[in-house]
Length: 84
Image (cartoon, rainbow, N blue to C red; front, top):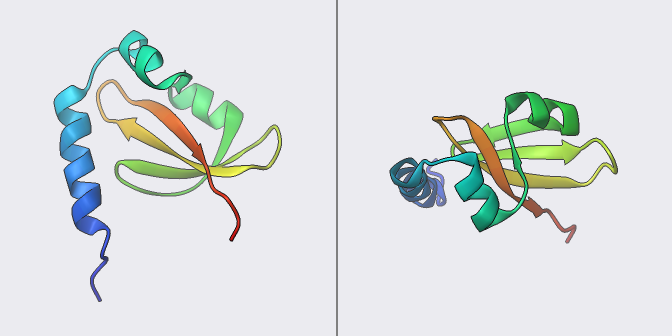
């Protein structure tokens, strides 16, 4: 069985790797940014498929996704998942 989103994930991984940059740049572009310690403080990780990590925010239980870059490892662009 093939994953219809696999190509999209691969393309976004390439984009993020090409753009991998500083925390300050990511904050200016996406807003709040988390390093690994901050991520585990604020979220419970449910799963991941690079370059996305699915999380549940500890403060309010909201489920969502973050993108991440590998070096330096930073998480950004939180998107809340809406129930259907």
